Length: 444
Ligand code: EPZ
Image 1 (cartoon, helix red, strand yellow):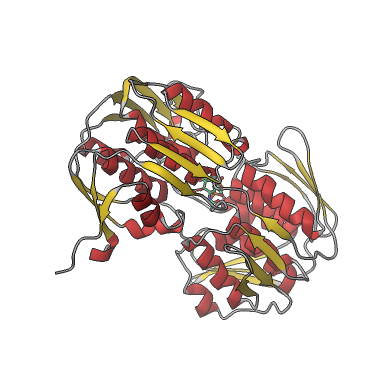
Image 2: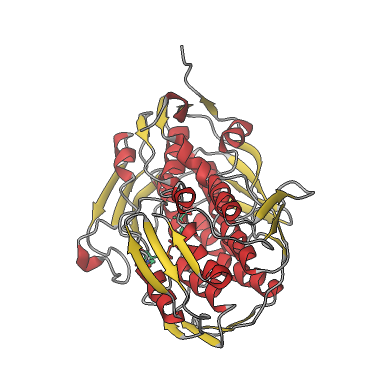
């Protein structure tokens, strides 16, 4: 359900122009906050964006006795875990459905308290999003897990022990689960088929600063030697490459020109190559990246999402909006989430021509090809988009609707904009700064 103040009126047709600032990565910051639980001393995390996922984790940490305070600089948090304690189950449960991060509290709480309670998880509805890998991993470390109506109870009858783990798929969350558990487990953990996203590397940097011993080997293998105690860290979160790419796609789709201060080339190389192939222009300097539409037609491309260093699934939805403006047939094969193309039906209502397929189009067969999921798309362009009534389905899909509404002729009513606050800091102010014509509907 969405209320009136959760609706945004977007008057499209104006190119986005100007500069915005992107801070630390949504997919690192909450995890680094959880890591602070493992330490015996306070930690300092800098470049923290003010987004809902950060607030949820802050609340959960505070329930467990961690003090979380603003530091001296803007976007700095100081987390003190010296008085970690059990939290009231009903209080934890109040966070049910708010985010996927609570699952990562398991290892640290088992180490600190010997038990943990995990409420029902939230997160974007872009596929089944099971947590079987997480629980399989925790059992291997020696945790005992009991499913109860209100959530999952976990216990560590003795100190958790290092083990050999091979993930069925290089899952980001399951890799983080292993890292956050193995660092204080007894002995060595060998993790194969690990995720190696830049946010994982940054989490490893955080843990290493705390005193952990982690070696990244070749071929997705990570070795962790457990230690008895960890200290605090002082860390500046890597920039949000997903938010940066979203603004880049907004610049391209609206024929605009946006300087994203804080964007970093290293973590965006794959995106930048694709952006250039589509016909977008960019220029990298020390402080950020400028993205713009250089004029003339955009090019259709064949694209397959994949785990890092492939094309990140979270870049797919905003880029698809830009592809509606490219000349010819673009093919998109989504291989990470089985249901991340459903957002395209609203784009079709706006005038786009996007057809979904169950087959693995244009690339290597993936896990979803035999399983009847609509996970490939053919985008035929260029198409003129018209304003429409849109209901935001998930975080990236939601931002993509904003891009489509900005690129369209006429006015769109975008419902459910609060969801975007989960991962995009101050997006309304940023839109206004870039000259977007957006307004909250009047209440009279
Ligand atoms: C993280 O989700 C990100 N979320 C996602 O960001 C991102 O899309 C994803 O990694 C992939 O990069 C956060 O970091 C909070 P996964 P995560 O485990 O860890 C399957 C965004 O918009 N799987 O790598 O939950 C799963 O169903 C988002 O910012 C299992 O089968 O993703 C999926 O098909 C959304 N069993 C695949 O693995 C499990 O136990 C990859 O998921 C776990 C995962």
